[in-house]
Image 1 (cartoon, each protein chain N blue to C red):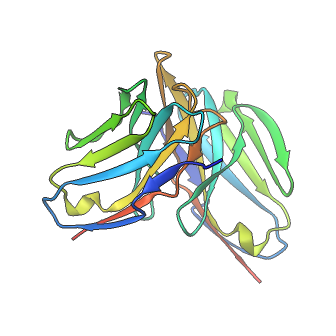
Image 2: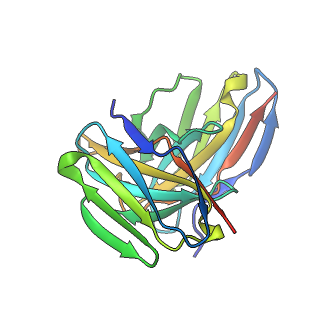
Amino acid sequence: GIQVEQSPPDLILQEGANSTLRCNFSDSVNNLQWFHQNPWGQLINLFYIPSGTKQNGRLSATTVATERYSLLYISSSQTTDSGVYFCAVEQINTGTASKLTFGTGTRLQVTL
Amino acid sequence: DAGVTQSPTHLIKTRGQQVTLRCSPKSGHDTVSWYQQALGQGPQFIFQYYEEEERQRGNFPDRFSGHQFPNYSSELNVNALLLGDSALYLCASSLYFFVGPEAFFGQGTRLTVV
């Protein structure tokens, strides 16, 4: 099956710093999403980005589907950004089903 | 408008027992997918239900089964529980079978098997 790898696995930042998270995937995909999982386990959809670049406030994401990677940029980090960031790729099977394959995650801790 | 609702939020079971987890999708959604997230790992796809049928299944044994009701809500059943089944179980709802940008996840059910 498809492999989804994220780097770095762990990241510690001081508040106000910028960071880049990377997601590599091993096969062509229909879609890619970035999620933030808070300490209570809730997965929040940050970006739906099969290709191109999107921005939402301090966060932005870029996917280069032809080269099978995506980047998530966090600028001016805040303590509330702490948590685990997952990328997930969607593959549509025979046009009647689909599933998300999640990466290994990047655990981010933002300190004061 | 309620989002995806899962119940219960926490559960403790003994090895060998059976458990049923429940998921109510977001209003207007008709597809439910279930994921298992072990501690420190990313969620793993269990199966997807659309039109009351299991449409796709991940690499999980037959001890894991599910059901979707006419109102689109869904249940996940796990028989003969093992210690390794301890995990956060997440439900995602979406429109049609397509996960897409309109997918929403519930807060999860944390299952502990002792």
